[in-house]
Image (cartoon, rainbow, N blue to C red; front, side):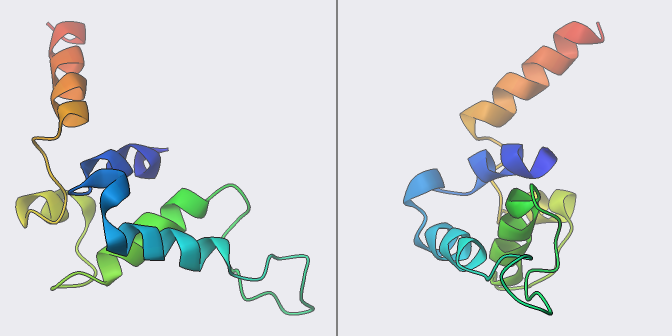
Length: 94
């Protein structure tokens, strides 16, 4: 999913403390089958979507779409993974 890739664009990646908290928060929500009325409203398998949106919601200006989050430098469009993807896309569509 796109959100799996976007985690690579979070500044300091796995060392980003807010990303760790967002991941922990999402992972610690009661699962859909653990409560009569589940607190986890997103589909099983979409944890990365919930996590990156949670992380973006905690930024200085919450709720920015992905592209705008890159422009605002919440996400790093110059991360090595982003450069590799852009290079691959250029070669693919050349």
